[in-house]
Image (cartoon, one colour):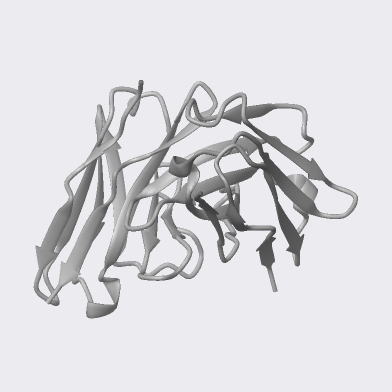
Length: 117
Length: 106
């Protein structure tokens, strides 16, 4: 059974930091590029970042570039999102997701991040 | 910045055909993916690479892309198809979602 389990969310003040984790199981994690996607309350999906299967390339949305860093540990099947200089507008449900490879695509359950003073 | 444009809502009666469109200037050069998101759940991939259906997705879901427009068709929509649908594509290695279309089946 394929699983992605997100963790690490919570409430943080503006300017603070959080690190999200996404633990993968049931599939060959190192074969998939991995994405972070977020969804603000009552809003649509927003793509945040991608990291290639081997970690060699990383790309970010303009809204988080320079503040967020995506990384992965292929030995332990874990994806990370380090979020610094958090803003109120970063408040959202954050999902990790695999790239869609030949129709295979898995999503975590989502983890809540609230940035508030 | 590059955008994908979707109509906010589409409404059909059960058994009718629903068509959800997505427009974007780069679509002639990039694959489109479609995701279904039901309330309180993670998204589910229903179409990949313009028109391919993943294993387990009902045949009533189909899609095509022509020029700057991509269309997701739900033939004989069921009540359980009521959800938000998002198109997704890429631009210079960055992902982009459309704003989403709420499909109401009633």
